[in-house]
Length: 81
Image 1: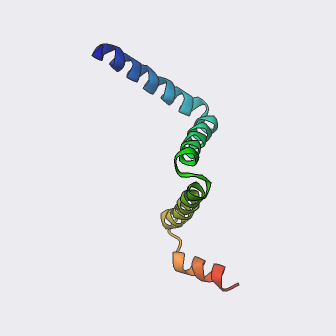
Image 2 (image 1 turned 30 degrees about the horizontal axis):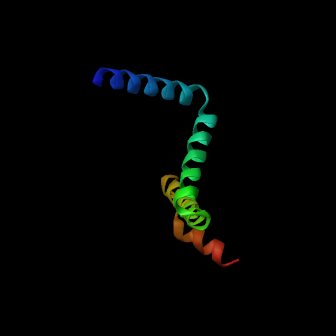
Image 3 (image 1 turned 90 degrees about the horizontal axis):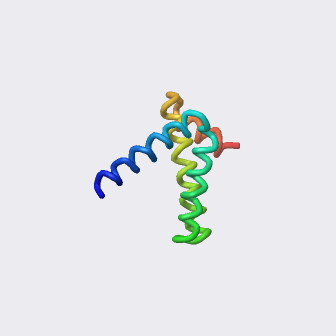
């Protein structure tokens, strides 16, 4: 039985790698849709929305850090309009 699950795991990993290489947008979209759906069912709409909001803010801050942009000047520009 252990060999069966090992082979199944390898097949799933190979298929996942192929799908991500050949169809990255569909693969990422499907995975994100599945995760958001699970969060909606388990946590509810508003809590899921808060998680998505914080994730988006974290992504933006992390991207600015990766691009070596100063976050404080960006925040000042946004709040001093």
